[in-house]
Image 1: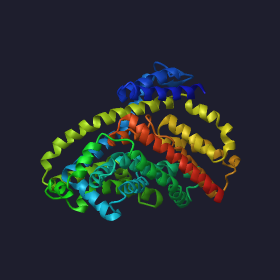
Image 2: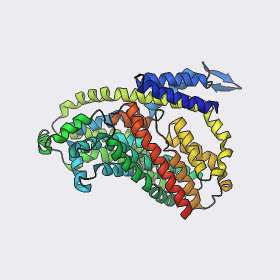
Image 3: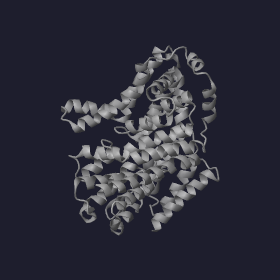
Image 4: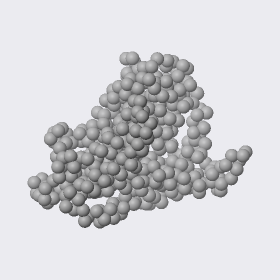
Length: 459
């Protein structure tokens, strides 16, 4: 209880420092992480306890900071560069125009949510948001839709399939731990079904909050909306073709999806090695960047490549460092005894049925930041308890998998890299990120759990 109280107080202090005292997010998060690390008992220096190496607070913070750059840092840079090239060549406008013709101009927010939901089935939501953000911006300019609505809808769509539908690593590992590795089609189908309520709730909330909160790019978007679309197109000379426009985004998505083919089918080892290499977000985005550079030269603007690269690094620098600070907070919490405390008291929650794995995953998600880590940690505790919970059939186990996924959505905040990706690329301050994205993830988790409980009564 002491650890949980400290965690809640640390989060409250961090929010207060950023919103009320106007402290820069990087300083607020790093200061909070250091204070929390000292209070939960992480030693000042590296040492050895009972023959086991125990890292000190500086090592823990450094590990959390560097892990973000290792995992998603270069992906953010490459994704932002692709987005800037798509914008400068007019390809983003071309993509927006293609979506409008396909879905219609009256529901751009729903189009964004559905697009995110599909893309995140094989792709991590962080990478998916970076890849799809240029389309979000262009579609926003094309239709005059609220920037906040489009951001929240895209983030919600990406988040749902990220926690519910294999072959995303979290739900895939969860299904395997629950003995459903040969019933993945069941898990995937149930994941699609369990997305219905949160999809509706996320769409309604996105429309609502778009009228209450404004992003920093809202004024520019409104001005662009007033400008004649024909005049906007004319300013680019001519828009590139559809294939050239979509390739920098579609090719990375297809490459990242290709890893699923290797896992599901018998592929020769050499071919599998190449596919798995290219399917990593870093290499997939590298290939996408090459297509974007080719697009830039084909548009007669190749001389701008160096300038655009410089602009990209200036833009993503603050994003990277704030995101890395969030990784520091997550590392400090993970190095505390929080996980052991939650595990030790898990038996107290067993009488709650499906609500038990939901609450457990929500505790891990809120305290540790990563949805994938929350899912894997929770299923490790829950899997041995399935008979005690009364869930023995494949369908019941799949419902447990969904409940864990719903908990892993609840909630995304400052210790989650996805929060910073959404807030920064969505042109929102951390305070507005809490009012929009964090609140939306709470609504998504609760509505998803309500649907899962309803399905448990039917099945």
